[in-house]
Picture 1 (spheres, helix red, strand yellow):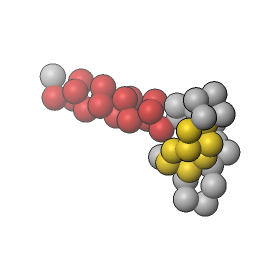
Picture 2 (tube, one colour):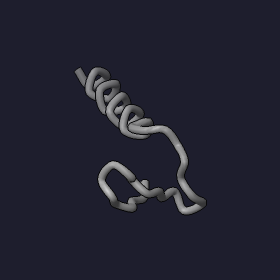
Picture 3 (cartoon, one colour):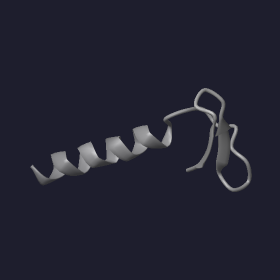
Length: 41
């Protein structure tokens, strides 16, 4: 059961890291043109 939890958590963090394709600046931030916002990762 503990291994399953670790796998699920790892998959969650990996998928959130690839939520959208790059185009970030040197600080890891970018403009979201669809929402009109600027955010960092």
